[in-house]
Length: 138
Image 1 (spheres, one colour):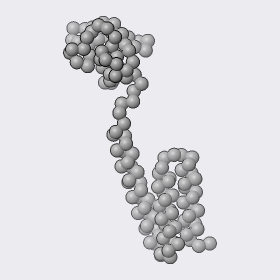
Image 2 (image 1 turned 60 degrees about the vertical axis):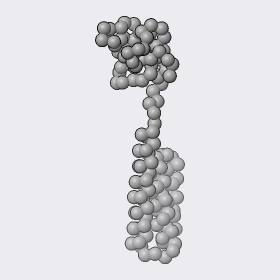
Image 3 (image 1 turned 180 degrees about the vertical axis):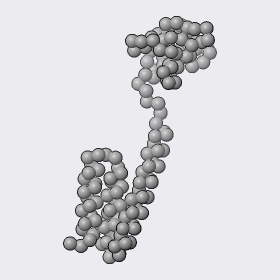
Image 4 (image 1 turned 90 degrees about the vertical axis):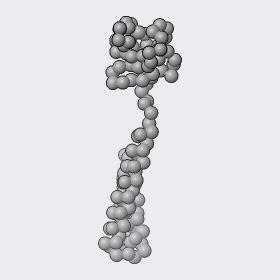
């Protein structure tokens, strides 16, 4: 068989494995092997086939990592606790509180000094294990 057939078979094998994992890295490597197959199909030398395949694999991996890193920066806080109502059990002199939430007491802070201490309070954010409370439902 011609060398390009081996390149394309390996590329298809990696792409089939990618369908099972869903990481996209095997897809990038499969595309890189496809580039090597195209180089073989056009009759380029074996070292050039390897070089083009390696460059395509490295470039694809770098691009994929940058895209994933940019996406992770854009993801907002997806906590399911945000917007949930809490009951302030005790307010301390320093402005912090103990709040009853999910069957236990948590440390809590108001989002600002003007946040009322009576009425319904909601979780606006989490800072470590401290609840940040607001009087408006987010």
